[in-house]
Length: 104
Image (cartoon, rainbow, N blue to C red; front, side, top):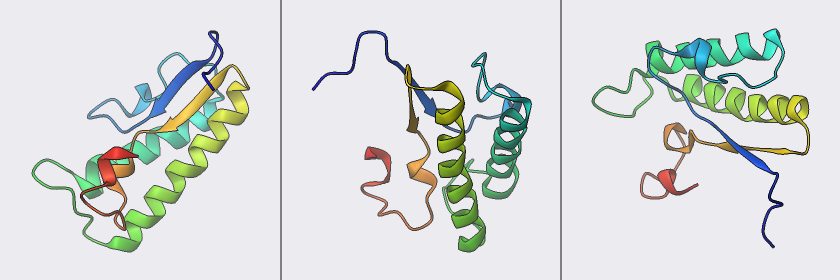
């Protein structure tokens, strides 16, 4: 079954130096925008994936990953049915199989 033509796909993923831009111009609340910026900042400063993707503390990585999933739900709720919010950060899940992490 194909998605309707008017369905917009949004991928939530962290970005270097653009924590406040993660959601771009999407019509979401200031609170959700702030949560996304904080989530992105953790990715930049704690994970700091310049040379490798490995959380210094797996529990911090798990909390960050759960927050990303919660953000997907919050963004989806705010945007409604014309949008589909997708996970673009599976590669950063500390519990992911490294060979499959980029494929989800």
